[in-house]
Image 1 (cartoon, rainbow, N blue to C red):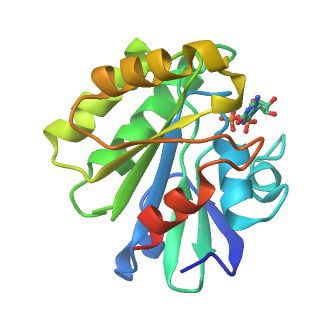
Image 2: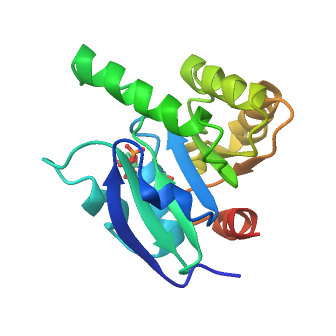
Length: 189
Ligand code: GDP
């Protein structure tokens, strides 16, 4: 299977009829700057798809895309919002929690993107544990593997696997495209 079509639908900031039609949701979450937009653009083969929807001036929220006309891709705001005001940070934090932990939404899979070069941060692990505690179906993607030196590749990947625990980690680079087909197989299955 492949992603043959993807289009931006809307930015969601609260209860929305989109979530009521029962079509599967694939949610993407990660720290700001981890490469979430680059990954979504690479998966959908549309340069600028995720960026366009997050253009300056647009309300930050959950960006909803329709993929292959039969499922939703939900792009959540990046966490670790260092540059935002405290009010905006709290608002985005609440919005993310509302979407991820509202039992009514039932995402088919939650894709958490981490930085392979940095490894999972405290924020990444805290969110992963909260998702695990709610029994969510999680896929971890370690992006930016092109930044790993050959000599440290195995050691760094093993450390990430150890920290992530029971979940499968797919190693990936949105820069080179290395690992992309495994991700598509996982999220479309
Ligand atoms: P977002 O804030 O999580 O949406 O991150 P972006 O997709 O905007 O990417 C943040 C920065 O990381 C940009 O400068 C990207 O070019 C860079 N980046 C994203 N993916 C990769 C990757 O796989 N390898 C490398 N070297 N850089 C990447």
